[in-house]
Image (cartoon, rainbow, N blue to C red):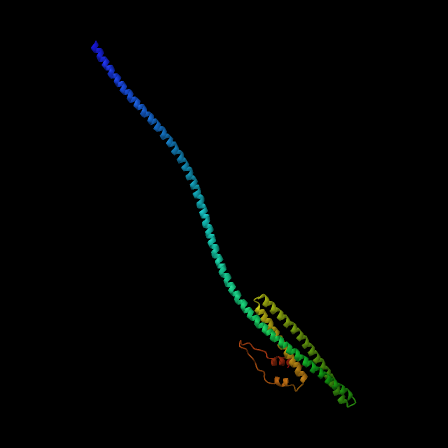
Length: 296
């Protein structure tokens, strides 16, 4: 029995040793489990942190995507603005080029207008001198006309004093007196008409000078109008000169040197541009033809 107890005791000790060993193993496994639990909790915390970071990154990505979309929209808008600005710059360059061209044309026209105004001022000065000469000539003709009127009056008085002569002589005196009255009336009418025309031409000349001064001050491109007005005034001056010459020839009588000069064949004058110029003699001949009784 003791041997059985010893064996049993030995078995129990062996079992106890096994239990102690297993207890150590269990304790070690508990420690490992505890470590694994702590590690698992740490990993879970890390996963939660990573999840939060990932969610934050997702929000940041969404924000970045939204910002990128906005930037892309702004970039497209800026590109459109750049295209519009490029078109505006091209248009402004074209306008600047056109403005430069117009400025050059305006400068050339202004220079031409100044030259034309300078020439017209010179012509106007010549017209002033011509008006002065015509005024002096008209004054001389008026004086000569007064002397002729006085002479005609003396002839008429002398003819009336000889009324006691023959009937034929009386008839001749009467006819001569009537002719003298008609001649005086016609000469008076011609003189008044010439004075009126000369006054009108002087007024037109003054107006033309004023217009030329105004155009020169404003530097406008109206050179053609000034040249046309000056040409018309010169034509009127030439007509007036022809009438003065015609009146002088009437006062001088049949032996007038003017009549002898007009009796020569007319000569046509042509300037460089080919246009026919009406000479003073032609104008006087036209006046004689217009004032003749039969129109010839």
